[in-house]
Amino acid sequence: MRVYSLKNTQNKMTKEEIILKLTTLVKPYVQNEEGFKNMSEDTDFINDLEINSANLVDIILDVEDEFNIEIDNDSMEKMLSVKATVVVIQEKMNA
Amino acid sequence: MKNRVVITGLGVVAPNGVGVSAFTNAIKTGSSGVAFHQHLKDKGFSCCIGGIPKISEEKKATYLTPLQLRGFNSTSILYGCIAGIDAWKDAGFSIDESSSLDYNTGLIFGTGTSGIEKLREAIYKIDDQKVRRLGSTSVVQTMASGISAYLGGILGLGNQVTTNSSACTTGTEALLLGFERIKSGKAKRMLVGSSSDSSLYTWGGFDAMRVMSYKHNETPEKGSRPMSADAAGFVPGSGAGALVLESLESAVARKATIYAEVLGGNVNSGGQRNGGTLTAPNSEAVQRCITDALLDAEITSTEIDVINGHLTATSKDSLEIENWTKALDRKGSNFPYINSLKSMVGHCLAASGAIECVASVLQLKGQFIFPNINCEEVHPEIVALIDTDKIPTKIIEKNVTILAKASFGFGDVNACVLFKKYSK
View 1 (spheres, rainbow over the protein chains, first blue to last red):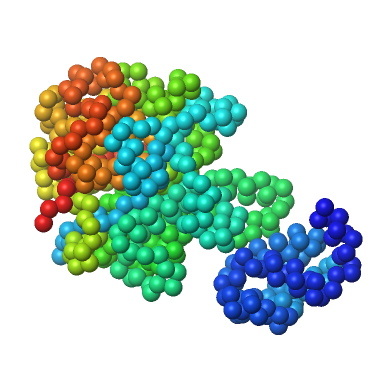
View 2 (spheres, one colour):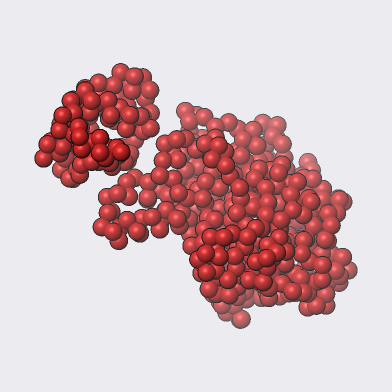
């Protein structure tokens, strides 16, 4: 069901929609609830949300599953903030 | 300076009881935690029974955070965390993730093969060329020291935090390592214990060695029969035990409840010489481990009221009894009472020493000797060595002052500890 709806929408997803999905994905890893409440495009995963750096790889796996994309090592290294992550997701979805 | 060392907290996750009060009740009433497990039968095990602690999802969630439980698949870490956290709270401390670092408290928590189900997941993924799909959870759940890493962080401990591994001696060895550290003044408190997975992957190798009982698949609670005439091999078990050891000075200063005192003990190896092998004990070394433990504890063998043996229900039980009679120079009606927790929970392998130390300490604190179940007819070789009334099949409530606990393991390794009812 989810796969079907993703296929339908993946090329039309707006930045806001991506951020909304991302918010749900990062929630379990967040250690700074205040930072999470104010999560925006400018949010940094480690500095603002205090996510354990080891968990960044788990977030990337969750992103891959949610957006049905594959993320290469070079792109992974960039995914430290919401803004950079959205760019990578858009790139891969349009690839 | 030699500090006296006492026990101020207990935690246990056993097949016949999770938590100190449930476990105490179970060992007093001789309640078995051994059950039939279909998944063992499905995989073609000869022995389809085992001891697996019952932990609900709700209970898990009270010990580990949602983040810790993401991708979590290690029963040994789960059991160790529950036992360790319970022991810590039992000793009067709280769990606070922003607590200040405690340099006076350390942790020695042993295990055998830990997180084996998680390791299996990883192996399948790697073989499927999906190594990156392991994420961050594989390493911490499969490293031997995973259990001490989890507990050390939950409690915020700043002294030595490590994991020992010496097969079925592990838990008793962990206790003695912690004891030494406090005695020598290097720590005020040590949380010690051990844990073992509930997994057919942990148990399979023993099934293949034909050392597990396959005669009681229809009557699981009767399956573990230490010292009995028809003992037919051990029944696998799992779980964790944890004890907070503390210098007497520290315990008294904070008015902690004192369960018992650790008088001393010894750890040695038979070197796989003089009849010892990788899987069989060198009797001379076993006896020496016990006599050296008595010397360390500065007591004589006649002072021992009760022995909590290793006694797995294999053919080695009579040899163990013979070694006790020789080491203590006591036999027949002069032999102390002796019991084996394994009759109720099976052989919890790396966790056995810690769970059995908890059971030992509970006997001193509660002034009782728990019954041996499934020992209606004592093995004739044992009858020839000690009086059968020294192997109680019903609970005995009497004054118990000194208890000897021993564990023996593959690799020809031995550990013996002497506990004493606490008195100023």
